[in-house]
Length: 225
Image (cartoon, rainbow, N blue to C red; front, top):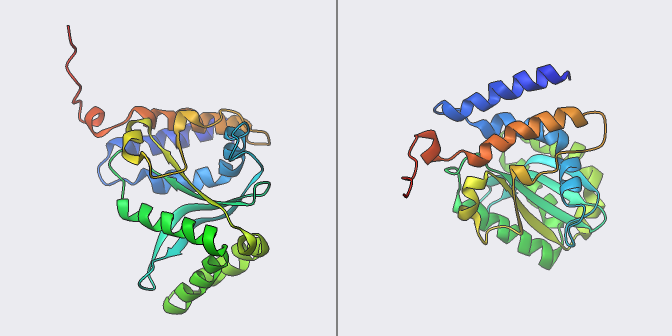
C-alpha cells in the first residue's frame, strides 16, 4: 500500500462521520484487523497485566447467547501468547453506538472462561453452525481460524475485555471493560512492513476522539466569562 493511497482511503472513510446511516465501524474494522495484534502489543508493552505477544484469532467472532442459538459478535477474538489470555476486543467509533446488552454477554463469556476454560467457545460455535443456513461460514471459522488455537483456547483460564472507543465516549463505558483505550492511546509506532501506513491510519482515527453528537451538531457549551 502506498502512503498516498492510505491517506486517500482514510479521508474517504472518515467523511462518513458526517453522513447519516454510514457505519464507520464496518469500514474501519477490516483495516484495523491488519494491524491490531501488533498495535495492542506495542500499546500494552509496559502494562503489568496485558503485556506480551498478541495474536489475532478471528474478527467478528460469534458468541452464542445463553438461551437460544443466536449470537452476538465480538469485533475481535485475540490471544495473548505469553499470558495465556483470551482478549475480547470491541470497537466503537461513535459515542452513540453502545449496547449494554452486548456487554452483559461479554462478561458472562469472560466468567465462563475463568470458571470452565475456553473450550465452550468451540462447542458453542458448533451449535451455531448446526442451527444456521450458513454452515460453511461457521465451518470456515472452526477449520481455518480456531483450529490454529484449539489447544490454547481449551486450556485458557483467563479472558480480558478491551474497548477501543472515542475519548468522547469514555464516560459511557466506566466499569464495563478491563481496559478502555481511546484512539490516541494506541501506539503510534509498530514494527514491520506497514509501520508508516499505521501512523497515517492512527492519525485519522484520533479525529474520532473529539467527535460526539454535540460536536457533530455544533452544540457547544457556552463559554463562561
